[in-house]
Image (cartoon, helix red, strand yellow):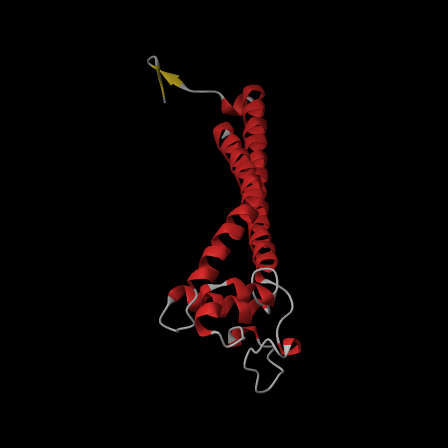
Length: 164
């Protein structure tokens, strides 16, 4: 029981450390994925970026202007961002930078980090709850052991030098 409590305490510390590590790793990874974007539905990283931008209502890494630094933007040279940056209530949005009001103004990096931190907090709370249950179990076992030594109903029966 004691080892389990120590292990879950270490687990909580590991997850707390991961929360701070997440920000640095997300920044590096998101930059890489945005540079690999090619706008096709067949490409997994392109689908992932479009999905994240639609679900989190964001565009680019920090802002929609981040798309101007990507290989996709330079290759197509159409002065637009992916259509997944368009706000859903805007009709006929093409992602054109000439109409920035049609695009999500907030970047995705901060929102992704925020979502990951929320998930990590749920994991930490689950680990803390598990640790609290283990502590309660240890206390219950101690109470039973303490009562056993004083209660004659718990005396061991011995027959022929062995326990019955």
